[in-house]
Length: 281
Image (cartoon, rainbow, N blue to C red; front, side, top):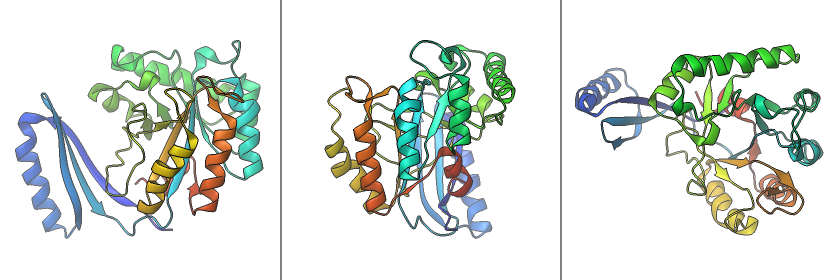
């Protein structure tokens, strides 16, 4: 199996950046680690230090990951049958407060999807902005989701999607103790995760394909998917409601168009769980 790049990422106070950067540089040289790229993101008193090191080989094929939030019923009625028909799977992040409510999936739907090979994961208990919670409250939310999954006969989730896309250093530090990855989004400003960029697993970016702000599937394919294909990157999409007409939701025909393009152009369609297991070390 061809592996991606190993990424070293350290979130620290800006004041400690020079000393840590120098120490890591010395360690890399002493241990013969091949450094592909290094860069720093700094905002205020925080700094994020990225090191991109060669683990084995770059991606043989570009990757595509479909993700969904908010347990909307169209995900079960439309997206799930489409994935089965196309021989692929998606990742569905479930928030407990909406399961079984009007317009949303039931536990029976979620269990059926898991049995059909879909990747069912955690979108919190209450869909609260986690930056407003204490670490103890965050862990209680995750524990409640774990318990609900287990009670439904499912394995406890290992991956998380930030409610409202909101997170900070405290959220990352807390959730890293109970989840393997966390996905966010940047509202159409992040096209794909390039093999030359960080794939820091607690800040996984995604591209919203909801039919808002004039989303055009042909432009998405011609510009973003094609660039991802050429660069052998990872495209993670995000949808909420799924229907036939769009109007703020993701059109099921757009998902099918993206799948058809991907399967015809060498993409491997994987789930977040599969991405973590096989490509993000």
